[in-house]
Amino acid sequence: MEITAHIQRGRKTKDLVKRLRPGEIAVIDHRDMDHISAESLVQSGVVAVVNASPSISGLYPNAGPLVLVRGGVALLDDCGQVVFDDLHDGNEVTIDTDTGVLTCKGKPVVTGTILTQPMIEAALDEASENIGERLDEFARNTVEYLEHEKDILSSETWVPKTKTSLYGRHVLVVVRGYHFKEDLQTLKPYIREMKPVLIGVDGGADALREAGFKPAIIIGDMDSVSDDTLQSGAELIVAAYEDGRCPGMARLAALGLEKGATAWPLAATSEDLALILAWEMGADLIVAVGTHANLIEYLDKGRKGMASSFLVRLKVGSRLVDAKGVNRLYRSSVSVGKTFPLVLAAVVVIGSLVFISPSARSLLLLVIYRLQLLLRL
Image (cartoon, rainbow, N blue to C red):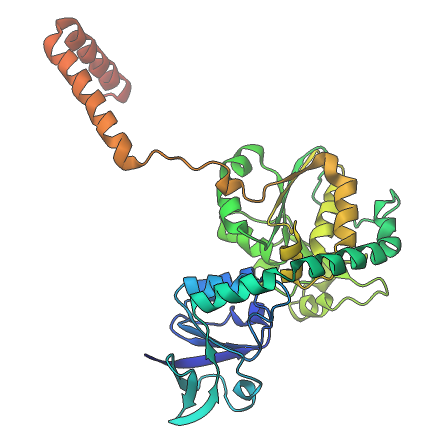
């Protein structure tokens, strides 16, 4: 089978998905493709993905390639840098899914490997055998950095002041993590009823707006949140390095938003900053959506350890509710198809009672008359 379409290239998948259009082919350079990036590619509507790097290196069992293929997207893998050197955005290319050959203007450009679901599952099984080694490395790295980052536990941690009051309120922190959109949808009734302060961590702010809500505060590197969301009027807190460098501020400057933004230099991830802010500003309850919680998720994120996250959760644990997977906590097993006969039966019974009982008919007529009076019919 052949797939012919125009390409869009991007070495950072999270940036590329913003400009991909349905029916195109994405050319990426993403070693060990993570779950979230794969979901974004599927949602963009691409018909195929060409990866310059191995989508599964065997370092750990990353599920991204499986998400991609199960989503109906062809994956041409480990093609090398030639796909960036010899191809350009807008080029029309053809991928032969039987041979793995990619051609442009009738000439072969590169030959890669078409990854199928059985191949990916076998590679994941093999990578799972290395998880013990990864866990050991992860734990050693975490312990190494705990000494450096232990100040996070201190009550003297500097926190930027916000115009939005968090004291005594519920705070909902949304991170672009596993199943964050599904969990956010499930929490809609809670948001409408309790009206928590909404904090979006980078792309989590976009998720809030897509769900019909407006973030009050946006925290992060500002690299994976849209311009429209940054300009939505939310307070902006930019994650900075301890030495004062703040790359995210350059983007805000380009949008004319730097004057109202605050840089926050602290050795912690953006999601950790959001949790610390809520804690230090006196939030009564902190509800976290999409936060990273296990080894695979941290490796997917590219982190070698979780020192700051470990310390932050020790600090805020008494007020923190992790809503990860809340959408799967309860799923009704009663379908509309099963309830319809019950409703129909109830209507038949009530109708029969009205038909055979004079008192029931009188009661029904009385209700109708009252409604006519109320509605002035």
